[in-house]
Image (cartoon, rainbow, N blue to C red; front, side):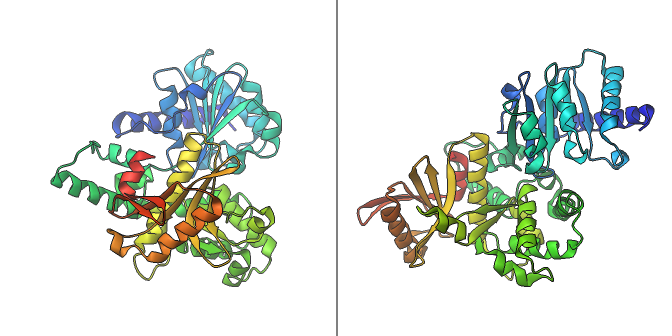
Length: 424
């Protein structure tokens, strides 16, 4: 590629993103990365498309001399490995030979980029972003063993959403403030936390979703039966917080190969569109064989893309709890595992947290505003799980009921979802 054209593209990209940082309401994210950038390690920021990875990278180096390029630009579509040195040349021409803070945004679009980053990391502070968890697979994992730190950025949490809306969280709320607070929570529950959607409205969600499918999955993996994959993606999103099997997906399209369908679901996960949750069992073989539960990265996608006959607040609440559990595990680098639980009598609880060899918490989610509206089977299932898993840390996340009850000798905590989201 021509060096002068590269220079124009890099200058335009830099001007655009700096204008965004200057003029928009850019909040500090909960994911802290500044202390993770140390030579000779590269920092790899992963996450779903449009979660804010570019802005987080810019914030990390803001106030210092840095160079930036975003490879998710149609003018760079024919860029190849040989052109990467030209990018470095342009960086030095534009920002001086001593620029050593480098950002390579969506670099997975360039085949063979790993060696280039490996060469730079010893003398530069390098941030790499990508919208695919497989970015760290294969060659990069081999060459950067022990020499990179990876983190995953999610769309806005509820705390970040409130910060963006300039709503201060206080200990005690007036009646008016609580009404405003609940209104904001309903907005977040239904319309999610993609920064652009929070700013401009949920109309942008369809565009984000289509970009994920077309750019991060269909084009990347050269999938010929793109419409079949789209049908399976829509089905899974429509059935968020429900069990599925690969066999159950086989009848949704003309594709009948379980291997192909399994690969497609994996691609959806690698693009951070969905998360798969395993059923817990003390016997590993049963965990592998049992149906999985599926969750979507953001409730806005469920409401915009999924097919629903009526509003399912219970399902949206459970999906939101799943996202927050995954987020906290990622941001805090918790050494914990997240499962759902179901026994042979079909007693089921939504989530259990396991740390090392011990189950440390069991969580049930219900759309209820008082004890009388909580279905008895949900409490019974929690008690069955407590006995089977030898765990007494029992939590029920509700719509608007808060209490601590002693039932059959077990203490169960009840907390509204909006309050739980501020505490985790």
